[in-house]
Image (tube, rainbow, N blue to C red; front, side, top):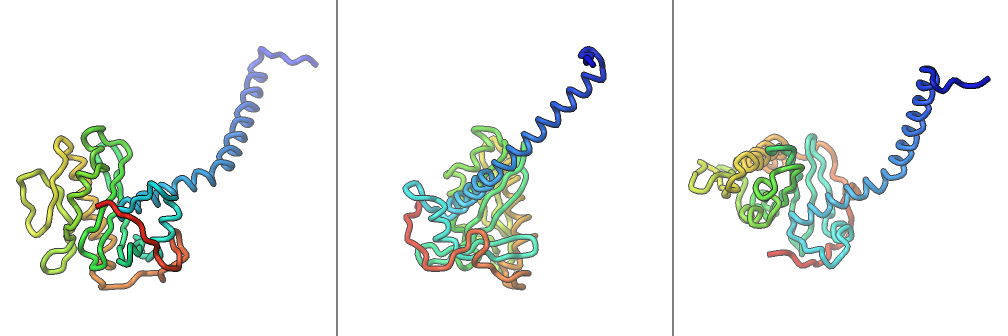
Length: 233
């Protein structure tokens, strides 16, 4: 029986078969590439954490450096804290998520052992304006946070305000916002405040412990002595 290639039935069957074949091929490709994609996502996360710790990994394998320095991950109900041993000094790295002008922003905040003094920060963004909001990733903006404190004189968690130069925040230490990027700068300020107050206050103030036991073998966990690495100063 000869098929009528001009019929609607033939066209429908043909397109159905093509769609099924393409869907199967895409599913197989996605399955095959997923381990590599997951590995790239993890590596990017590790690099960002090292950036917050001001570790220079340009001459080394960043994953190896990360697993040597980050020795524990504390699990909380709505957050996690990475514990690093940097040349004998304990640093805590807190993941952050927020909203900028055009999309999500995020980053990592590294604190000294006192859980109050900022050691370093590393911000990222999805689609902020180049030359303006995108400057949150640049060192001149990030360096302003170093040495600032996230608690006030009474010990309350108040974060650090990101404000236009010349303006003042009551009861908070502050850094200068990026000129021409008010919304993104406000997004960074809001992200820091909301994340620290809503998700990390228990860790920062010591009022309560983690909701789950710390897991030294969790992502980034590694037992053993920390290595010595050069940091950006």
